[in-house]
Length: 280
Image (cartoon, rainbow, N blue to C red; front, side):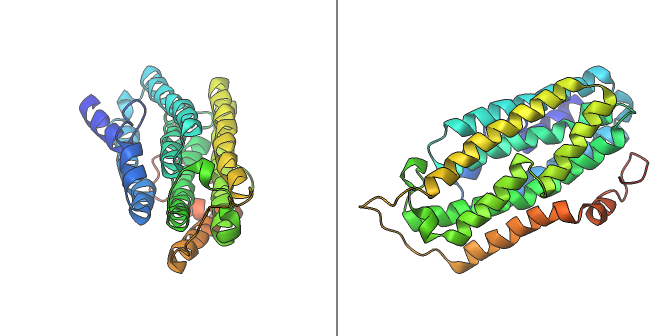
């Protein structure tokens, strides 16, 4: 159990086994980064869910669940803090993935308790889905910004909002979901996790999620603020491929729409769920 969990945790880039993810996701071409963040790490997380809540369920006792939750909390706080320190846009988005992965692992301590277990399962799985769309959109926009400006240095991206209005709008929509603001899918997911924490009396996870949300807002607004500053006199921009920006816009709309059509989507995600009970 320990060895299988360790291997899958490395693939999911769970703190402190996340060191491979930022250079891999940040250094890859934008469409590849989008697929890596949206799908690849979710596959290993899916396997962890199936193993721990079905095959390994007798081993999911209180100490094991809390330990996994502590790793998730470490990912949220450490990943967000490192994202705030980044100078390169794609590295900021990559460290944001490290942080957002942490929310997935809060499912374990919250779903291991009977009160709130269903809400925790729904929230964790819904976060995996909403994060996939939002982060794919964000990586595509980052690639478009890098193509347009010729570099990815955040402090030199002044005026990019005038050149890529649809791209920056898509980045903002994806940011709404990552920060957990309504009416996005990220809001629904984190609300359910907060509900599960309240129901099970695990108030410390609420503090982690609130602090993680504030840190997410800090590093994402840093990019958005820079985009609307005046264009430097020596700046030159290229027009990125329309498909790159258009795909990001569609994905960001889906991330937002997941909060508006949550009931039907959640019913589909609960097919085969090991935790019995109707979707809220």
